[in-house]
Length: 306
Length: 306
Image 1 (cartoon, chains in turn red, brown):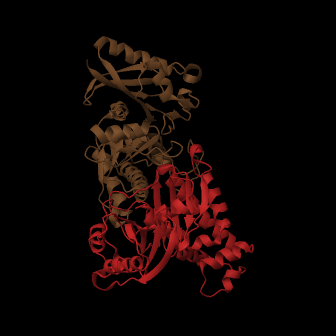
Image 2 (cartoon, helix red, strand yellow):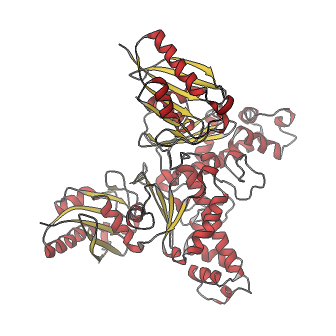
Image 3 (cartoon, rainbow over the protein chains, first blue to last red):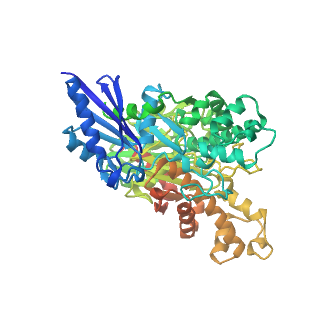
């Protein structure tokens, strides 16, 4: 009888699922919609039913389920609140275990779980202490120490996007504070910086609906203003990661999310500002691009139960 | 036959030693000079001889030795360099074990070890994930996660004093970078801030050889200028600890070192700025003063082997 393991990554719109062999090979992946009506009470039953359906097609047994959720999660698998999927405080481990009859269920915060996935099969391969930062609409982070997710007392470890990087910022971040890293290195933050002091001689000034990708593309074409924005971006991110290193001293940093598709230009510049701002013992860490894209979550989730 | 455990804290001038019962009670403590001549090659033999001398007086056996050293230490007890006691890269665990014939020797960075001591028997009692910050001439830090020291890949975890807090600083820190936390919250940093914009109507303007203690004393007497300096100090420290919390999400912060003798005024103000700058899930952490003073090191050291 074959033995399988399921990895689940719950997002605001879709739930990503993967079925893995007991050696950790991804055998198939699929998605289902995230039904957030009410208190999101359909989500876990939908997950359980979808996994059982695939299992029944294949035959065999599911030996464990790992699951990433978009909110703070305690070490014993209780989600403390996920506002974007309407979950209240919820014992996800207990509930999913009951729904599926599978004893081995583990739950983690989605950003932390993605970091674990990248360490296992992606940009962080070969290391066992990494910090992953995900640069998308917002900025997420995940911390792995000694091969394990650093959860934190309130499940809020790795919230690197809300480290304060500028004390003199006057505009508020979405979180209410001012000067958070997210205000400078998220997609939205990069566009905000580019618009703030736009120069007429830059190609960026001709673009309506400017995106972060436009900024990086123009920088690659040597547009001076775009290069200066990328430089600011790298300065904030490199300095923030230096601050993280002074706390954690990881082996490597993995940079993911939509922005990271800009590629090596990011690594090179961020590395420079990082090295300018760390103690000698912390210099020359490895900087890597994430490799698993949207699959990092299901990989990391299943890694928790393998 | 009685069983004892020794805790050792190596400083630049003296080595502090403590003999503990197997239940962790401090039975006696003493000091010897740190002989740093050459490559500091006398230090470990001196430690071994001093421990053996005390053991011989008492009778009984030493079951383990824990030791804190002022530099980066790897998980397997190798000190990567301690410039102030002239040590090169040194296998302290192996060497002390050979000198004493005791198999159980553990080594940690002194600031991390002090944090462990405070968690065990001092200001951090009752928690198992804390961040300790030591405000003295410089600023040290130690991180404990799940009851264990977070060492870091290069033994440089917890170097909180060199997190960058101001991007616009023009004066360099001792480490070479600019804008390190240490430049604002160490004894030297506080005096520097107070001197920078000294006001004639402050009692501080009449003091030659101004100290950080003077600043806190004047603040307690409601000297307006001194209060504004304490407020700046608290803003930098509270913001830096908020940044640490976004990475680690500890249960509590313990503030130690000479500056912490100013007492509750520090806790109250730092807590305020901390809460102003963290995500909701991280608010209202515990802030405690360190309680063990110079004994934190020997307590933490012995804790590693108990």
